[in-house]
Image (tube, rainbow, N blue to C red):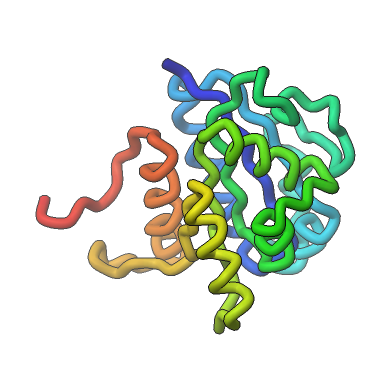
Length: 186
């Protein structure tokens, strides 16, 4: 059954992870029926700095504002089943762990947890401090998935996009999408 998903992009470094994830989702439209997009102001600034463009403005998905609580996924009754936060800043993670629903992103995370749906946070920070680790533990215990933006090298990636896509494909796997990617032992 096609999925209803939300992708949220925060201001952590790693805009390329968001761009590649959104490109990958664009390539499998038969696997989802609705896709809502959230980009913080900081995410837009980081995207422009790291990727050198404003291509986030050309994405073919509805873009919702930070305080748009009329967005369908602000309520569990809308049936959205997955929220992917990529990259996920530690500030966002901390607010989610504390149950602070003061904007659309944190409200959507709260909905995913309370409805026992998929919440995937692509953590992008290094090193972690003890507060980060405890927030990750809290979210994991509540049912969320922490997927650090830590690439793998089994597939012998040769380009930056190939390295990034080792994480993107893992995120898509965790979200339940069928993607062609490197599989260990095959």
